[in-house]
Length: 604
Image (cartoon, rainbow, N blue to C red; front, side, top):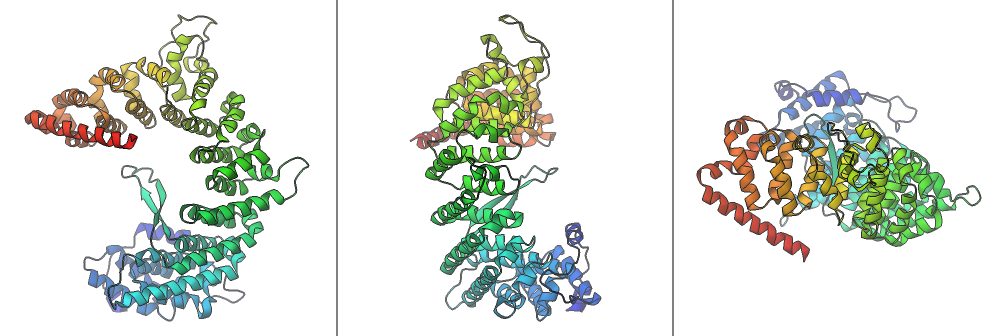
């Protein structure tokens, strides 16, 4: 096998090199007082070549299966040494992701040792922890490897189920060591996902090449019935050690993971967990007349746990929180540099649950609305506005508070300036750098380039969900064509303009489109503008689409050569519009009818 690997060739990927640098070899936390045995140089070189071969990929499934089988056979008998080695662990992780259920089960059995006694030593190691996570993540493939009659895979899945149960028992026996260890806690969190039947999947936006920002989503998969019981026992064990979970950051994140997956898959268990957590926190001593919950809301570590508790709570529990612990303290919390994030979670949870306590929370915060703005806690402000979409009776008051806070409420003519002020999060005097005389209704503010902030864009998007958008739309219509182009090509502003245009009526959209008709080509050639144009196209009428197409087709050469606009050319079917206009109109009319039919179904 070693000779085959020497002939494989190839280069080790930079990703693995970076990961290797991030995981320098250290003594395992589970190795006790003994000096850890290490792999010899020849074996380390072998596993480096294994990783290089895996990076090259396989075109033949049989070749891949044979390669994995051969390398895992080399690992057999020294799996723990390989898992705790910097280079060997990287190769083993990759191999486990390609192995079948039986091979993963055998590897876990060797790593765990007799009765799972070695699981902690491997899991609490900075290299071994990654290997254990990789092995656990293969559980979702049980449903993909659907066993036929007398298929040995059925037996292999049973073996893997046994090993996961063995790991779960090992975790429960030494729960505090697992949940407080930086590496063991990650294994614990992965185990919680597996026992609940969901896995975390990283998704990256297709056009975000520079930022590479990824979001984690949960996907469900089928699990054995025994896992439900294992999850309950593990939850009970964490509740017994609730003091550790509240005081330790690693343990707190593990408990948050448990709350999240139980809220998704085990709502009854989630309620019990929330009740136990809040029961413990509120039982602790504090200053006379002061709820201990207020102390934890301001703590950097426990505030994250309370955010998860609020997000996973039902209406009755939220009402209890507010009535007994938070009433009359909302402003103090909203102005606190840490507690304001928990306030955002509370507002979002109350709005999502349709809680009757939401209007009371908003009443408290509206009293000091300008103070929250002055503190720069725009997350609280945006969350309040977003919650008003679900609390219609507060929408009018919220809009008035915003106009007053940005100093464009009186005289009424100043309300036409509200959109630029909301987008920039600047008051009228600061934005226009002028002092408007009191009662001067005829004064026109000087022109200045439009500026957009991230939270300002989110604020406007939230306001688009209000029933009465007349003030916002009047301000939009007062913008110049240059401002609309600047807004449409801005990374944050394009989302705000999209919400304004798609939430408005056909008549209002047509008025804006007429003002933008000479800038369609510039929008199409912009990364943000092209996305805006596609969104507007999807909600436009056939006549509006036709007018957009008529303005685009004269610039065919520019559109088809631009990296963004060429997608617009293809998606809008502009070639058909040029050469077969009747077919194009028929196709667009059909799409319009389908969209109208689906919108009516959604309303019903």
